[in-house]
Image (tube, rainbow, N blue to C red; front, side, top):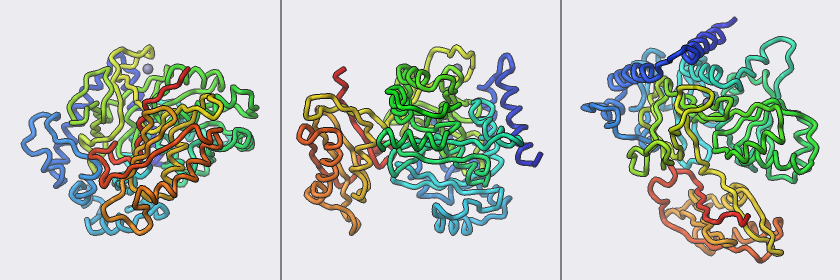
Length: 478
Ligand SMILES: [Zn+2]
């Protein structure tokens, strides 16, 4: 067995041992790791030292976010570790400047690599990680969610290559839930897995026939896409495969939707994974579908808009996360725009790790009436992808407060790029055919309308700088 695999197994066993012991003291493990992390960060990172000096309690550490960290990127790094890897700040900066989606992520082959966060956020983020750290993160996933035994399984001779279908929306098929798998791919382990993306915006026959050709062992998708697929199957479309696993991108999955998945794909294991590029896996679901916080690897605080604590059971406006594993590029009380709630009741699985839920801010269901007065249902992203495509505008909020009436609020910067649409009239001219075409496909030629307005700056803390926001106040009639 090579060193890489041996380390994964060792860490895996350590996590398993803790989980299986009669009375694991996760809190103590967390606090011990936190003390060591803060000491190291204060000693060796300029940025963290400023935040941590004269701080008595953890909760007094001023929160930070991606923008603040990127503004002072080099100061946020641990200088001692940089030295240990023989890296200078100039070298790191040069590497970051040149990084693009096609370049190698490795600053030091098999030791230090650069991860880039992108997706829906306007501000790209760069995070330096050490392989040792990602081994630990991987072990947590392996130990606490049956899902990730799969890549290891593929190592056994004679077992077929596992096929994973990633089902998403249109052009921006970003699936943070599959970042673990993406990482694997980057590390040239892709020969073990065959991954393919599918757009759920196609006609059901087309999508089903593509999936039938591929015959995936696993389907990875955000819940709304997966539920849509389940509905297609329940409508009677024939699927010539039975996925063994359904992996979700950690959005909220209602009981009703979960039942639908179980009905459509009997026997498939449903696994939810909540994490981010910046942190270790924040939460993984147990066999009851409950997300359990990996509190011995991360600290998660549910907070309101002013970063004050939110009571257990209440939905938060954001979260503050500390990663207890990251040392080279520490992430401490780092704000992310997800809305979660920590559950007060225990889970039947018996885990002592706290249970939580996450609320989707990304994808909502929209209901409107077609020309015949029949209710139509779409996913917010279907319309939003069309609306944002080609406008080159930095930020947009789709407001759906009144039935059959959409309002798009665009941020047109004071000094727009030459390619940007600048006035309400420009945007209307661009959007009208796109919107009309979209609605025609849903049988709405004159029942649904939209209006546009522009603002010079996105609102402060606009959903953690997500480029798109959706605000829906119209419910289904049924
Ligand atoms: Zn559980």
